[in-house]
Length: 171
Image 1 (tube, rainbow, N blue to C red):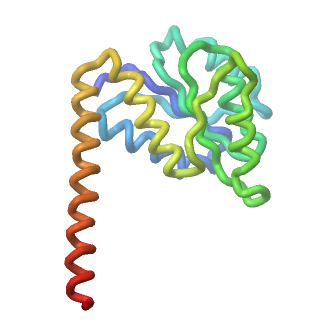
Image 2 (cartoon, rainbow, N blue to C red; image 1 turned 30 degrees about the vertical axis):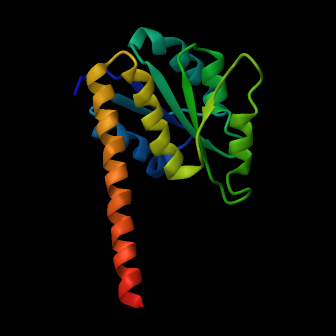
């Protein structure tokens, strides 16, 4: 794995770590170096702006930002960099993540945030999306992604066979 981070994974609070580590796990699978940090659009806005503005100099290619509730983290970062930003809305007790989802998908024209599904699935897909972006200039990574897709298909075919067999046995 290259030691220089290509992906930044940031989260609004430490409580988001269990979900956002799924993005890190997926990046590890593809041997993509990343960095992880806690930044709050509301509680540490100067740090968020600094992170976004320094991302290009650090060599980051994609930033994955997970946050719950008002979830402005991804949008604030996107406003301060042209690096692709992928948002992961995280569920909260109060509004079950709909607030976070809406704050990410309702970005004004000109400041895009690619938004994934809520929670762990979204974190995994954000990492896969980041890998796909990076693979446009990395043929080895592109091949790894193709192999991953083939593995997914094989898993579905195996599951189909198990279900067919169980269905026949149940009759």
